[in-house]
Length: 251
Image (cartoon, rainbow, N blue to C red):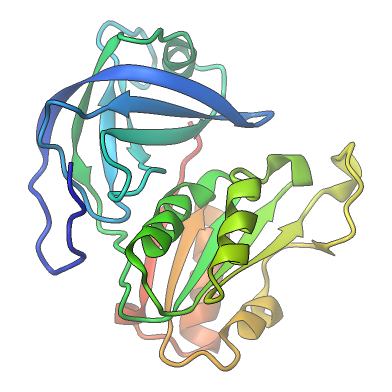
């Protein structure tokens, strides 16, 4: 798999068979699952999604889920998805996969596309961090020079997925910045001395300060995403073409 340019074209969705490679925990409630794309011509843009199908799974929502990719097109030979483990039959079947087990993916899907020609503000709530990990990895691997500021909210510091990797990217790439906030610090067993509270208008304004013509991406639960999009449109004057967003349902 080669790095697909971030141009106006995108690959059409198709059905692929992929082999499970491995998985590892990201937080106490979230896990990353990797699938091999070797021997396929699967391509995608940063950072699209797939429909992951586990044939035979008996789940009220069916044997498939639409999931954003947490991998980057610059990472050859595999794709990854990072999901919150809810105990559903689908998630339990995914957690129980063994190396070499086969699944199907339909994709690539989605229009949440990173634009490396513009400054970016990423706003993530909880597991909504998933596509932004791929975007930041892609920006680092391809030498993108525009500024990226990530605002990342989680209930507790334990729930920050990819935190070590994100912090490493910031240390290595001066144009990147990550700002964290915790909404339920009293539920944590870890000491937290950073910002607390939800992502709000003043905090978004601080991320935008001094940034020339940024594009803003919002990913999270529907209520959180709608509230922030309202702020961006109605209070901060963003036009629709300067906003990208996805709602994560969490099932």
